[in-house]
Image (cartoon, rainbow, N blue to C red; front, side):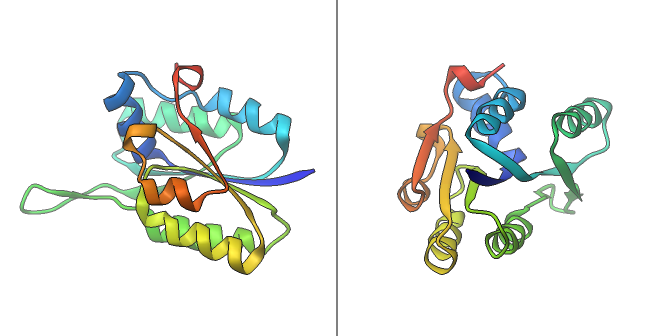
Length: 158
């Protein structure tokens, strides 16, 4: 039986599904799909905290589904740009999970920066890796690094 750890790059999934389909991702459908494949031991959703009501409602919905929501403050720089990157936090948590009883890591992101991470945990810990991403907005290197790529399409959207 699969022992699954799920890691969601919330901002990446939000923007890629919005830009490609104009519709949000359905986390409840994802959870149901993964739960049929094995036991979900870890489920982390990484987001930026702006503190607005709509965002808080969304985060509460994720928690209700079963995700642990990890938040970073939204940082507005003086030049007008914003910062809110979870890449290092996701990487640390994936590495820790890979060293535990987990045998499957599921990453929701299109960010090619994670390709090295997937290669490393497969090599070091013999972890099965899966990526969910919007096909035209997911880095080819990430798709190639994963054992399985699941394209986010209409069946996983609201």
